[in-house]
Image (cartoon, rainbow, N blue to C red; front, side, top):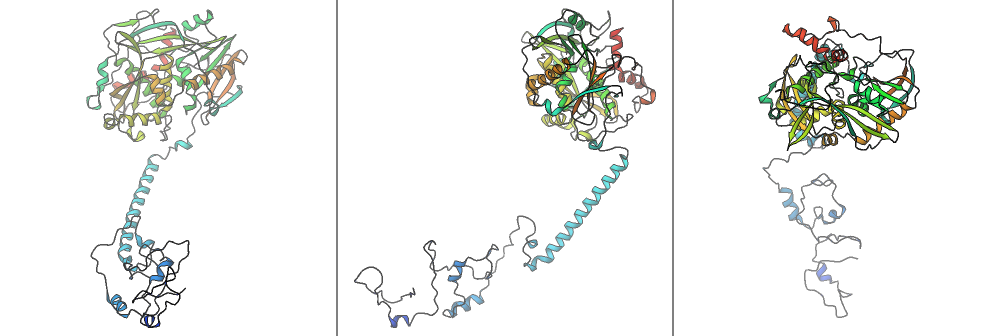
Length: 573
């Protein structure tokens, strides 16, 4: 179909719509310009413009302004090659656009890297690239220097991923391994226990000093030392109250809150630990060894940053554990109102001698029902009491300690006031197991509030003098939800281990957390194991943590180092 552009009159068609059959006028068509193109189209295409007078003719014939190829439909409107419009072609060839605006900056990197045909930009871009390469080379050189200096200062240290942790107890060749349980099976367990009942309350509590809730890093308080107060870490079978309850057949399983919390939070543990299990008749006793790691507090256990391996280093895992236990004991006594006003219970402290000054602590012997014929009794501890609306509320008191902000990456003195949530999140990452155990102990003791203190060193290299920067209170159940601690899963772990130990024969066994794998092993050990091979004596002088200065602190610090272990002798005396 060929048509023409009629400049003259429009022919009339008397027979219907459209042009007449003989509408071609030779006189008219002879005056039309030649080679006027017609845009072909199909029925599926949308009709566009008859002619586009706004199209930029200065673009290349192969590509458009955006770098894309011109559509095929644009070529039919290109009259630049047509000789019918000579005046228009002359105007187009002589026309030049002068634009004073700078070219738009590319969004992602220098554009010349992708459009290599823009040769005019190459000299400037090459200079910028050379400068950028120089800056990158300087950064890389500085990074290598830092790594080199770090490796020189820590040449005897290994990465945490490659560190080999020691077992908490030396595995003897005559021990018989009965089973090993991976932690992956613990995460799937669940068990619901009914509300427990209180059997006996012992000890005495001092009231909490609410002024410590207003402490800030700018109004810090020096951590005091309580050398005259005795702290007791007595194991299950050495507890006279538990022995009495066992003789009265009050339960079949006996433990302490510290041992139960260790089992409940086992999947979060990294360091090795061990628990002694004694099967006597139809009863089961969970004990800790004398001098066990359970008496100390781990520091940076779940952190990715490696700690020094040498015991002499004040930032080694062992030194920090002793320091944390020392801080925790003193903090729990400093935040009290020490005016002699105490809340006493039915029985006095079962481990204290008459006239002896003891720390503020109350022991709640509570019983849980695990099955129709199986009950568990645990000794739970609370450290203080407070009256709210004429109602007594029990508190647990614990302290987090900062030893060097370079390891944690968060400076407490700068962040505690403005970003307390970030500080807590960092501690949850680095000390997940310790915080989970404290929460589990507060839940077992049915404490109404758990107080967490933030205690820091006066100087990063002084591990004897500390300051309290803040004290924050949490409800145990809310805090357990916040740290993703499931109580049903906790009791599921305890129930599975109790069921497993109940199937064993009478004798002594030990649960050992593997130092390098997330699993726990059960060993059968002789009846006299852990009784004659441990002698309670001070550490050799070369193994004691020595202060940097102030010799008067030396004897005091050495006494604190073994304070957690030595108090048991006083209890048994």
